[in-house]
Length: 225
Image: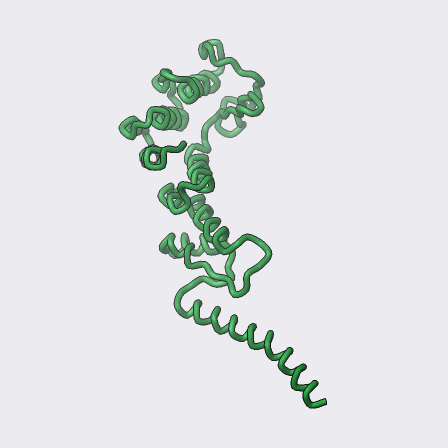
């Protein structure tokens, strides 16, 4: 009977001891400044509020591994969210050259150019002009891009000039665009298409110009777009 009780005590003690060790480890990591058992989004928001070091994302720790995203994936998610919050493309380089890193740069780009009146979906072959920044909400299927002057709306004409510059070789029509956001995006797209950082210099907004220079630099560095 005594042996049975001892065996039961040992069985109970092992997981209790394991939990105790994990808790002590977590406490020790926290004392050393490691973020423990915090969501990637919450950590990113904390870094922003404290104007902290982005590399703190790499210090993220777990008390116990879970069935969800791995610790590496959570750290990557922290960098992604941090870049999204700060609109700082340099943070995305911690994720490059993975697809997640390029997606991170795309997310920053979307934030910087989010006030464009019209956008095009190649999947749907549709141009959509939103109600906030355009001349009026509009969805146009199968838009033509052979002659931009055929559009009576200025926002559509300028979208057309941008899209031609973005998608077609040896085409540069940014000079026909007056909307500052569309113009900057056009110039950025032309610089990226041409693999030429110097072509970012005409961009009007300093943040968008800086993004253009960084994005082209990364494309050249990693030979990917």
